[in-house]
Image (cartoon, rainbow, N blue to C red):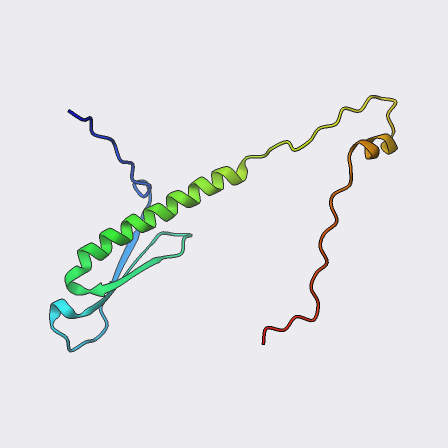
Length: 120
């Protein structure tokens, strides 16, 4: 028997607002257009649109997509906060700045900025 794998919901500890908007329409109830938006404080909302008959699927799909986006943003902020040492230099008391500069080459020159650009 295969063990069940626990699935963690990245939105479990968050308050998520789900708004369902039904614009005026003369269409039958199940064919009415619907807009589902999901969001939480401090995050841009995610939108799904379709028919009223598919509103449960739209909410489910939006929930999964919004959770994936929140999880991706959380992992990106974790990696952004990590720092790395690129190079170190040991300097004895008698070393001068000139010797240190000789051991550490200057940064590569930046490419020139384009001028006189036109988007038309």
